Length: 458
Image (cartoon, rainbow, N blue to C red; front, side):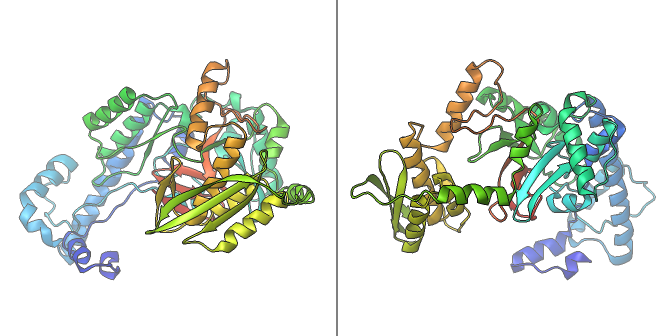
């Protein structure tokens, strides 16, 4: 009935949907199911489990569609495809041949990201693996600690997810004893990209439509290895592959509760109040504008207009910025006051980067979607030049990756030049939420925030 009750933006879309009547039953929580059964995600046993689960759901879904079709009528496009559907349902799906060929739907199964509803259900999303076992999140409501119930239980700790103190204690225990977790507790970046593809293929074998799943690749993946990955996916019957290489996204960070230093975990979970205290302290050291400054001006085509951004500095610090064009001049004035009022360039840029729009331009190896983001990028570009760093964040990440590759014991770590901590291997790939400044996770082609529910699919 949802197809009849639904609203469609274009008549052509409504026509196609009502002639085919597609629905998409799927699953979520597969990674947590593997944990419950003591099965390692990506192993042969997990592939067998996937085929059993999706095979059962697909067959029962088609039986239900046939029953509804017998009651309400088949989908209009069936007549032209009757022979193909008879072969598909009776021979491939295994529907009993004495059941009338009355499918109500063109297709019945798919696997969606389930990003939001998995948050509500407190389980892993879709068929994605878990990203971490314990982590701290900071947003406008304060700082909150999360811990995976099964991970805590595997280490002999029962956690009450309604009690904040119980969660915090369990999280600290899991972080300190993470190395003692059973081998089947494996997170996304601990799974090889070909294993991701094999899980995807096992699900695709029993799914009518396509599947939302990210195949995580290592930072040192090559063109040849990715090419082999896509050929493997095609050979195994996948309809599509969403591949993500570690370190390839702008603004990616590695964030984790440190497994070695408790102080690091605490600094990772700094509250908004602590952050405000730090900013207030630095804001007291206000800088008077010198008589003479030096700087650069960029002309950036934006929304069929030219955006001009001028950033001035004293040779050590960025002190002011001016912007004219498709942007309010007040943006530059306010940003300049913040810069001379003690705010770090990164803080000012972070605020400007929250503004998004509908137009986009490629500048300094970054996709900008608003004039404000262009101003932020010009600020960061100037700041990097003053620190003798590569001009773009992308180049900076490559440089850090290169340093990590030659420093023994730092493979896979993110090295910071501005006194940021080096995080442990117990990490999750995230960014910063533009809504609440919480932490984003990337899965199934979507960025989503577990704190405020923000979601954006690429």
